[in-house]
Every structure is written in structure tokens, then in C-alpha cells.
Length: 226
Image (cartoon, rainbow, N blue to C red; front, side, top):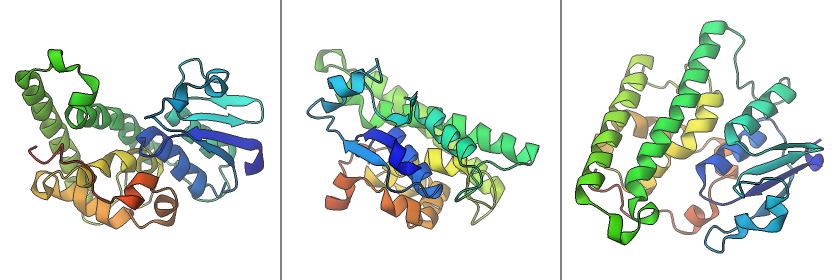
């Protein structure tokens, strides 16, 4: 079945990484793939545009079905291959609700991390303001406190939505992994760092670890002064 799948992806992209983790968890190794470079703007090639008018990655094709949003791909894989590999969405309504809550809350954490870590990438030099970056840092610190509280409430050794690894972890781990990679102080998010250490060696995550991170385990220190 995986041979009928095609994934266009870029290394280090949390949306791409979560799709690759989901494919591993659902035992769908062997899918076709094309690694594209952001630096060379390869994700804007005609091959991708033909499937995804936004010219973004991930772009995923399964037979005649095309999905270009990472959350959508992950949910599609779980629903289509529910009985295969790891069960990522529980049946219990309350447990399911928490998984969905943490999944979609990940968007907040991801964007606020981007607003600090990649401020100079997104904002042209002439438009950068120290006051804006300071505000972005404050927003990220507030967001981290929320996630610290969630894990504190769940108890030591818990995954993001309970005692089992779920779609919440598939979706959010690639974002959390950026904090140690970009030198965020451990004291700023100790619970998240405990979680990171617990999950980082999971086979699906190790198998999909960003290529650049394998070559250079430490990134720039853009979160050092958080």
C-alpha cells in the first residue's frame, strides 16, 4: 500500500516531520518520496505546484488522493489505516477530545516559536524592531508556561495527552524538538525537556530525524536568551 504513496518534503520542517512520524507509526515504510531544499526553492517546482497550488511542503499523494496540510495527512493516515501500526486516536470520547485539543493547540506553540526563532528570517531588516521581538519572546514564554502546566497536571512520564503515545505527540514533538536544538534554556521549560528526552529515541522519531540535525546536532542559538 505504501508504494502507492508519494511525499514531497523538506528536512527540518515540523509539518513534514510529523507526516513522516505518522507514516512510520502506521508501518507505512517504503513510500515514494522526494526531498526538496528550501534554500534552493525546490518546493516551488512545477511538480509540486501541479499537486499543491500553494507550492508548499508537505505535499502528499495516495493514489488519486492529494493532501497538502500536515494535520490532514496525519488524520487521513490514521483513519485509513486504523488497525495498522500504532493506534494514534483513542476511541474513548474524553481521551479523543484531549488528543484533538493538544493537536490543534500545537499551532499556537509552533507559530510563537517561529516568531522568535526565525524573526530575522521572516521580517526584512528595515522592518525589525527590538520592541516587536521582545513582545514575541513574552508571548512565547507565556505559551511555554501553558504547556509546562499541561505536563505538570498529567504527571511525570506522561505523553502529551495521557499515558499512551498519540497523534498529539506525532504533531507536537517536531515543534518541541526545536527548543533544545535552538538552545532554549532548560529552566524555561523543564517539563517539556523531560518529555523531549523521553520521546526522542522512539523508533518512528529516530527514523525521521532531520537530515541536517544528524550532521549538525546543534542549531543556531536563536532561543538562547528566552
